[in-house]
Length: 193
Image (cartoon, rainbow, N blue to C red):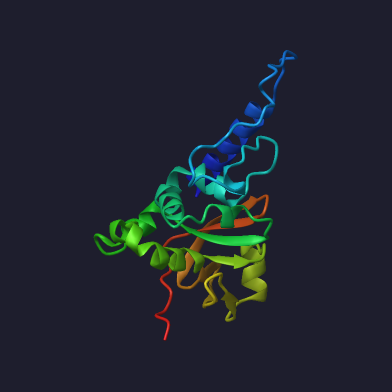
């Protein structure tokens, strides 16, 4: 957990330092719009912004513990969904959580022909709201949260720990458009009937 928090703080420090410009000299082309020739990278997720609080996508991108999650979000083309105004609660499985899935599962899900299945799984990790772990513990124990894929996950409190869909919240990071709850396993949605 300390590693994750250190990573987030380091990322925020880098953003802060990079946003400071002490030079008074400006290049005339610096403010000119640039054309993005990559047709896949369009939308709000691909606009450079050095001044705001990082959103949930930027937090995931800045975390070395979430490279698999970021690769999955990119494969499912969900980047723009994670930069919406929100508020969004993202339950972010770590790389270790993805590695615990049966061998070949992640590689199979990242294939283009499985994009819809991958998107459904990822949307199962997102819900509207901006609730801290403590608030979830007090207000949602034994209740369900509606997820972005139109299914529900159960919130359970066991001692001091909060579990969402069977995954334990191991850390939480506030974002500009919500909150990222780091979880210890990948939540797989129940089969739709």
